[in-house]
Amino acid sequence: MSLSTVVRTERGLTIAGTRITLYQIMDFLKAECSVEEILTCFRLTIRQMTDVLKYIETHHEETESEYRQVLALAEANRLYWEERNRERFEKISRMPPKPEYAELWKKLQAWKTQLCPSG
Image (cartoon, rainbow, N blue to C red; front, side, top):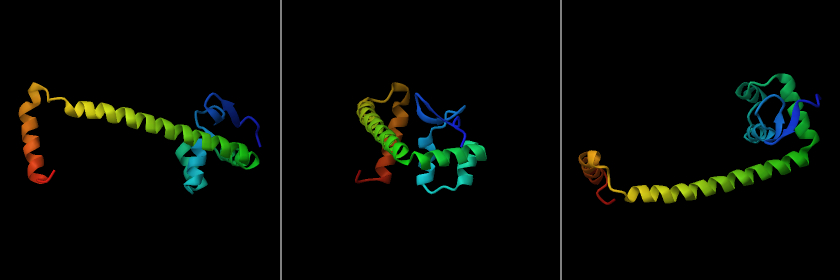
């Protein structure tokens, strides 16, 4: 295994010379994608893929732990932005339409009433 294929950067474990993290590769592996699909999607060489798979196998506990941390952080970020956007979208939905769109807005509301009389 080439020791320089997998390196630690500020992004975590990555494939040297790329912005591809091992966690991205692990997403595909956990989704049961084939090695060929991963090679094609990330444009990796067979050597890079072989080294990554060996690294993950050799450092299984470490990579799994970091992968779980990355997933937890991604979920926390998703929830944060979902809540932040919900508040913003609610605020926007309460705003009256711009004057230049008033007539179009009336037509849209009438059309929605025809399609969904109960809503």
